[in-house]
Image (tube, rainbow, N blue to C red; front, top):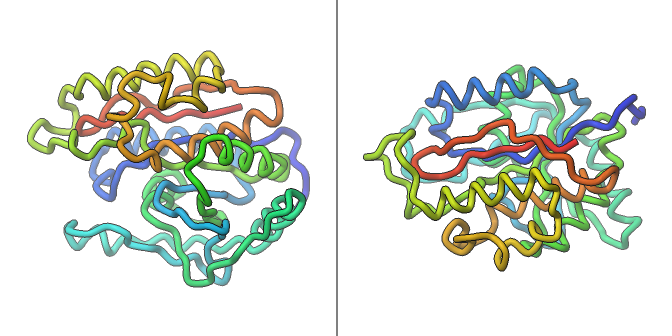
Length: 265
C-alpha cells in the first residue's frame, strides 16, 4: 500500500443497535462526522460483537456479507444491505503486522460484518464503496487489546481508518423504551459518561486501562466489558504515534445508554 501524507485518525464510536437507523439526529451526526474525515483507503472494524481467539478476520472475497446477529426486531432490520468490497490487501497487511509479534492471523471465509460494524457504516459511508475488513477481539483484557492496537498503528500511514465500535455505557437493564430515546439517563450511566469524557480529554491512558477500579459505576455501566473493549484497540493505535489526543464528536444518551464517541488523532 502507498503511504499517505498524514496518518488517518482513529475512531471509537457507540454503534447503537439496528434501530439507530430510525434516529434522525444520531444518523445525521454520524454522516457529518464521516464528511469531516479524510477519505480512507479501507476500513478496519473492531466490533464488540466478535470475540474470537486466535485472532481472525472476516471474509475478503467479493462483497463482504452481513451477520444479522440480533433477534426479535422488526423484519425491516433484517433487510438492510451493505455490499462493501472485501479488503484482501488489508488482511495481508494485518497478517504481516501480527506476524512480527509472533501471532498468526486466521481468516474466517464465512464471517461477515456484524451489526456493530455495518450499522454505523451504513450511515457514515452509505455508498458502500470503501473496502471493509472486520477483526475479532481475541481477548477482553485492556492491556492486550491496547498492545494489539499499537501493532496495528502503521496501517494509519497507509490510509486505513481503524474503528473501535462499542457503546460507552452498555447495561441493557437501563434500556427503557417507555422513557423515549432522549429520556433522563440513570445516574450511573451519567457518572461513567462524565468520567470517560474527562479521562479521555486528559489522555490518561493508565486510568482508562484500569477503568474497572478507577471509573465510577464501572461494573454497572459495563456488567460485561465487551462494548468498552474496542476502545483499547483504538487507544493503542492512536497512542503508538504521538500519545492520545481525543475529541468527543458525539455525546448524549440513547434510551439511557451513553452514545459518546471519540476521534483520536
